[in-house]
Length: 261
Image (cartoon, rainbow, N blue to C red; front, top):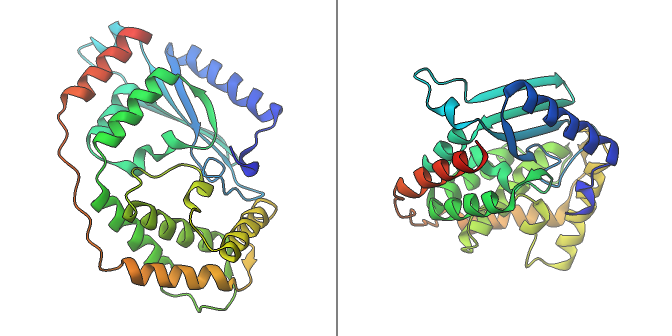
């Protein structure tokens, strides 16, 4: 956990009490809970909201009903604090359908609850269903489209800068064959020129101390880096992953319901 993902005891207590209340109301067990917003990515702003994403498991009888219940719940407590929950079945289906963006929060830098055995099995399935070519293109396109209208060397919004930088670094990570993307932004900042790394870390700290919409003065090293990387990667074509059998996903779902239900 980097310095910008520290959680105060007060916030952790609020989240834990909220999760306990949700367990009681759903009559289910919450087995995983992560911060899914900018705070979980290691690049919060001063006014970044808390976005908790959790996974719950009902009793076995709940899954044997003719009419299944809701597999998700959204609890917008306030503009600054939101909880979103998925049933374990919904989570496993999202992974089976090869939707990495929908489950990226599983690699968050902030874990509120994490059953280590379950998380390990989920991470193994993520690696098996990983589609590098598809995710590489998605990240690179996001980076390119974000900077397309930028007047390089001029002031932009700090939030726009990090959207473009994270996408560009993510495309580089995938192109280097490093597997599924990490949740913590700082893990993406590898093998960098010292001046570039120092500039980015200063901007991470500036973002943590500033409102989301603060303007950002020109950042020469990172702007040059993004432009060069996007040009280098634009014609790269990565292979798709191997199609994954449904059996491992079915097995994980069944094992989890038996264990926690």
